[in-house]
Image (cartoon, rainbow, N blue to C red; front, side, top):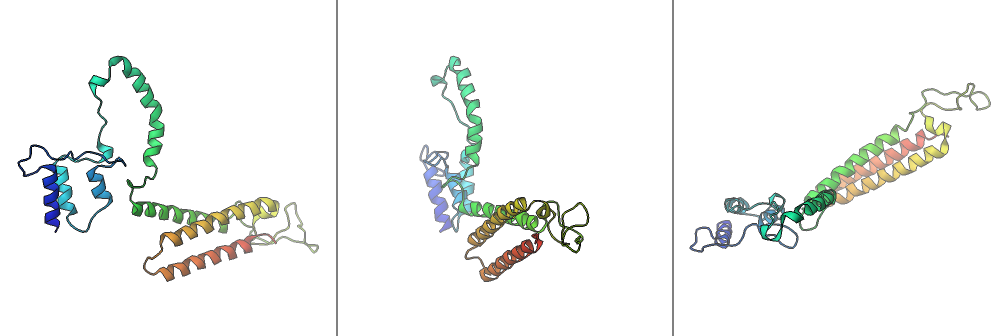
Length: 223
């Protein structure tokens, strides 16, 4: 089967036939993809290597490797400075557009992998921030009989947030926004790993991490 697929590709591009010229291997579709792009984005079960070698042998390129050509009959020297200036103005936008996800060009599998990496990084950062809040935690307990501090610092317990002792509002805002990021990142991990092997075990780990985070944050909060 894979031999027949390779033969069809060779016939279409005119290799080994009496045809003077086959199909143009670097034509692009409405999504801006060449035949080589489609082969790499949507691999089949068999024959990919043979088809890839055939296309490369015929001069096939990826869309990003094709340099734009200009017809000298349609461009004069007088219009070149204006075209160059316009091209320079469009470069930042083109650079941003190039890295945006485009359906049909980018593989959903690659997009899922990238999102999973980002979600794991956010989970790690927010979990660490929750257990180690800004300014750290008190290392000792300082109270007098009336429950107030005997020195210039606020009354506090060992293991409580220093930030919360000085500004409860700032600490609540920090915990709220950090918890939102942590919870959403865990939800993303759960969605992106749906139907993975050991799904139940992974969900147990996610729930355990969520409970650990909330327990630690509540304990660190100033009473």
